[in-house]
Length: 113
Length: 114
Image (cartoon, rainbow over all chains, first blue to last red; front, side):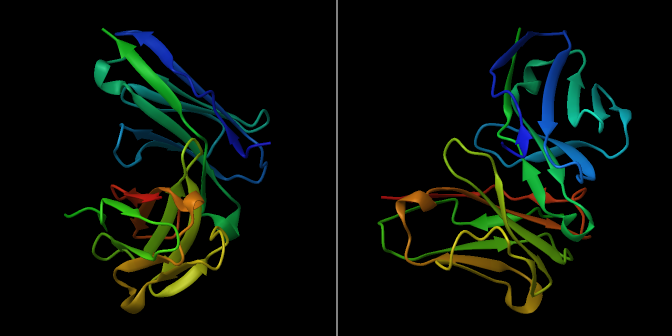
């Protein structure tokens, strides 16, 4: 079983709609959860992180965490063509490995005009 | 402020040769990380430096890989001898603190072993 699982997509969403990206993780000891955006041929860019159960909003982005279900999601409201990218879900470990980030393989998102 | 830089951007070598990748972190960042993504797989952690010391090298695949960070500034990752399965994109990241919140990634080095 992979440590962080994501649907590879592609996920196609019309412009202006809500894009919903999902992720599950296997290690119950995971402390923090991240969403990175990666444009083709570019480096990953951190867009959201969350460490408490519930929702965290930042502009058009909302991260949701449910530790009991080991589930993380990212909602993108009012999707724009510029949001088309691969979204990487990632987690870090317990205290001794807090900076070791474990990535999922990513979900490719395509926003169609 | 300059970001994380990596050199070269792309390297093509033959199996059995040696390649050295370089990473220059953001100035003042004590923490430096190496990751790699092989074709079709997820990005995987290789190791973590705090200044010049290796904090965690649990992700290094085998002893053909040697990472150094002399003086606590830039870092090099040497692969000797390179194998076909070493092909992929090698990312470097740096952060001011030892956490996962503030890791800034470089553009990566694409390594192709033929």
